[in-house]
Image (cartoon, rainbow, N blue to C red; front, side, top):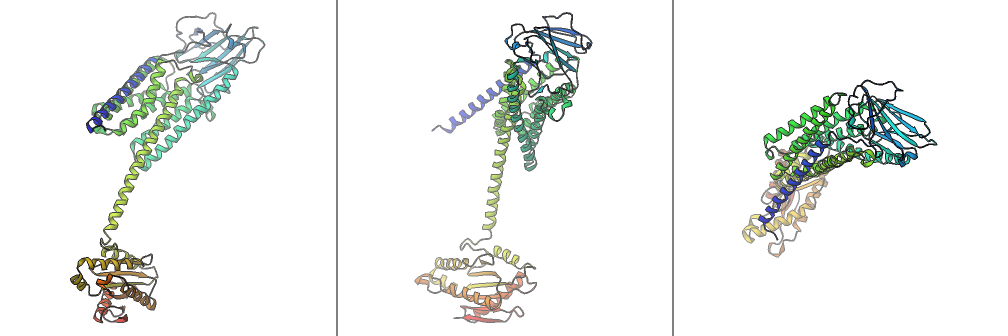
Length: 583
């Protein structure tokens, strides 16, 4: 068995190892995001397209005089950009290929299919109206119609395109395009459902448990849900006017807002004493800065948009490193929340870093890095929701244990430790409740005193006296129920509060109590132990103190009359009492 010292060293190595892993993931994500900020996919069907540019939006039927097959296009943001790819010899061009364009910021997109027999077919979409061309996964599909001749070339024309570097275009067969779109829609729907469940659960938890972390997490999951619905274009099912540039712009703002909320969720969940104040403030300020940048970036349509994207990538990279530093520092200082968030953030960081170093734009049938991020977000909200549930369940268990302990202590404070019956305090609480007006049920009090108890203690010892009291208590406990409560209210004095009996029935019950106690077996040494019983019936408006005085007077009357008997008290005159029975 390892010693406690070795276990502490192992724990330190574990924290250091996980901290190193998290730091490497953060650096990987930062470098990957920064490196991918200006990445572009220029190949269509395995070939690099040629381009032509017009500084102004060209007439619809205009065809460029020539194409440039090298370099990067420029000067197209207020005009038109043509991309042309020659498909001679491409096997996909023989069977009605489909061109899939990832949604971006443009006013109009036209796709021309050129056939070997000279025929040309044009298809187009506009911002705000994609018709039936939109597909799940932020893609716009243009399918070549059935024709007797193969497709020899495809030309894409973009009017007022924000950035050519953000274009992602691919070629697919007609059957493959339908299958891929179906699978993408199902996968995206599953991820969005997980985000919806996470947002709803955390919102409920923030209200019930009043936890700030859950509120931030619910906001983040809700924003990611909106981002996923907007990016995937599933939002077009209810808002078709959001097609194109509007949804692309909204996605940018939502992505920045989600980044800010994720930062707030992670940092505010960590205790302040686990973090360096400067590191904590710097991370929060970076998160707010990234969130604020989403406002201008969501409305810009021209200008140095690639520069803005690089700046946002740099700030986001710095933010990832800052969050990783917070988690590592809090973890090393013993924060359980840091361990939870490290596991939750590790996957998104790894995804961002991986997609930055590996070209994932054509992965998952065009879903690319955004789809990976969506799944990573679903993982993150699921993990944090489960962790929050476990923490909340643990808190509830601890609260329930504390409440049970409190209730047990409350009950023990009202119980006699020797006999287990109620003590004087507990009995008076129950008896007073029985006397509350409006019940309409007769109530009676029985005071029971052991006869010659001092002689038992003096002759046989206090242990024998205690045994006699316990035996009597066990017999009284048999009568306890909804209408009867018994207690030991003094040294050798017991009491019973009874409801539902009065007059002759009450007298018979009191006599049965006396006789059955007298019949208890106390062993040959003690022999027969008897009791005297005083009974008082509650009158209208009676309180416990008055009822007790009458029962006590009846008990003393039983003692004066020779003990081992029951005396009924008179509600009209407490000084008199009538004997019911006796030895």
